[in-house]
Image 1 (cartoon, helix red, strand yellow):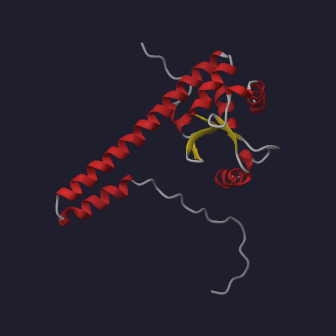
Image 2: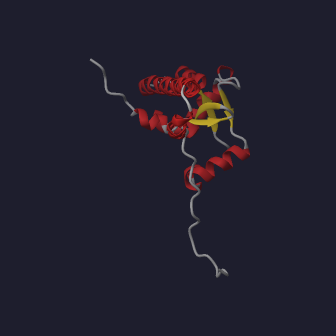
Image 3: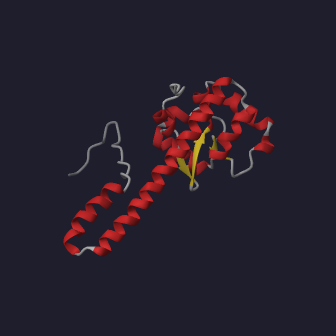
Length: 173
């Protein structure tokens, strides 16, 4: 009998970001999932720094931090003294060795499953793109519109620019 996940998959997948070409999770998001304070999570990590080399964990640069603040608004990540730490998949797996709660173990299992699902989805898109290119070479130009439409559906949506909120001074039209 399969057990209901302790954290819904979407809640984890929405907290996986692409930074420096790697899929990562941020310390404050992990703290929320583990139900600990961010400073408690970071303190545990700092006590065990040898377990977290640069390819497992890194601190965001000012530019990366500002970019995230723009994406999420200042209220979510704005009250921090230090830039967040980002944990790669291996870093998240290593967290289970420094956080010993039952919940941390269960959440880590769900996070590892989310990373695997993400990898499988990306691999299937690459495979689909390869098959589409082969079909395009095989058939003549009359299907080009269909292939272009499929390719457009496969590309991730471009984030929309948010309108500015507030009063705009008089402008000449």
